[in-house]
Image (tube, rainbow, N blue to C red):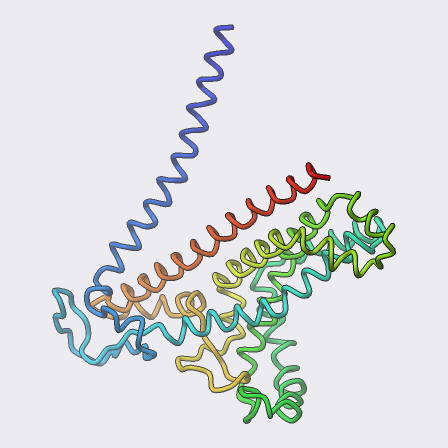
Length: 328
């Protein structure tokens, strides 16, 4: 009995230590971000969030602003990158949510078990493809197809829609949205599939006994019960899209200005940080690096908010499904 108690105590302390390491590492990350972004916060202030110009001005001379060195004439604003991040992520949701939800409905309601197993395996494989491979596919296949065929067609026949008119400049925005949408499909499909699969069979049978079609059962019974989990899956997919780096950096076009239409190039926070970090160290005052770290902190805050909301929604969705089963 004593050995059991000792082993339980050891197990308790080991797991507590492992949990503490995770919290400690998160604290270290937050501390480093705050320490290295504070000079940028002090120098740039609110203009960091209200300016669309990012210009380190390496030809400037070092000056002192609020106690920190920076180059004269330099400007650091994140509007372009925040806008590109949210626009590309929104486009990814427009593509990924219908595709992921449709896949989940097919796997749980219509697909034979053998086909469902194969499709589920393929979806899991899609989730495991490195983003750089999707980036190469975007550069070599998707981008040329968009510029030469799809975007001219859209400009010709959809030009009456605001944002769809004008000349075709680049495939950056659409290509980024398509690749991000492809990357979040496995997340939305797998979580939605698990949520839909928890629908009580008694409710489906009751719907059939009332003469409801499969589509009516899906629309009036399954989706209302699973909507919380589906929304949570969408939020998790959004978090994935917000933080994607390499694939977007390869196809976005690296714009430093706001897009004028859907055919323009864009830039995102994660992609811009990855592509300019090396050059940032050429700034003798290091203000360019500090500004990038402040951008990283902003992206971390946005991602954490998205993930916290997603967890809360998923937890609420689990209890709702459990209560439905109990009531039935």
